[in-house]
Image (tube, rainbow, N blue to C red):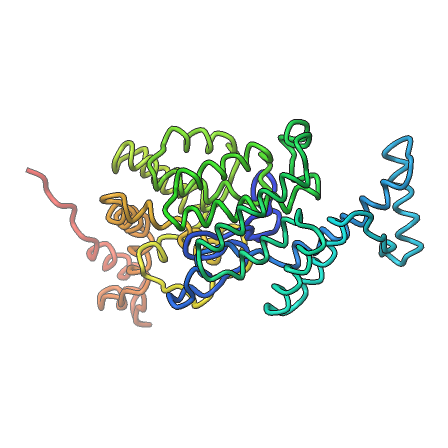
Length: 389
């Protein structure tokens, strides 16, 4: 299954790298990790086309708000008729507020080249200072982490003003389901990442946890990087709670996080080894990047499939720190890998070993040999069982 990290549903498999990347790489879109990229290699990068999908959702919301339906079925029937008349497209609806007008400019910006994008983001702010996505676009273009932080903070404040207090009270638990909340969610996620980059780790974790409280379904994929952050600061109790929220998760992030947590608590042995073996089943490529056996590409992938090599790249780019900071972890994962590989290597060695001369003679009897003499020679060629004292 191909997915993009981050906009996923409960199990993280919907389709977005999601947001976000994080520490040393982006999350939604792979980006060069070279040092001369500055903070751009450290801050999250949002996938433009994913946000553009919200333009259609917004148009649908406006269209439905102009009608009065007695039931969901009636609303669905109305939409079907509209789509049929429009050849599969919704009719354009004009923005009715300054914020909606500013958001339309943002949709233009998302399709524009980088230089034009920032100009359009600033234009959107002249229309409405409450346009959180405008601050997000400017923060993404920033090369200084403190500037990015300030812009994300302004984006969060703008989102709070635009939404008001009611959605935070009434919609907590499924916040992302409201399209109008998403600019705020993006700004707050961006702020979390830049705070982590600036070593303000408690603040970063607090924002990530708040996002999951608002939207446990985690369309942004924030739980993945939060798990790595909690491991990095050794907040194991909070990590246990997070892991418990998604018991059916099947991903490299979850599998290897659980394995490292077991190693920290119990050391190398049955429990930790079992957790690592399960992680290896989920994604066998992670150790290759974690141990430096395989080099990273110049740019991280934009999408990945569950269990594939691209997922491994993204996981290690986000989660290497706690592995590096855990004494003995590299040696342990190497030992378990070798132990896992030993039977296969032994079988391969036997299969490729040259046939002994006696065996070749036994396998190819001469035409003059009778079946009886062949049986006698085969019996005499069997090795004797060693004697035990």
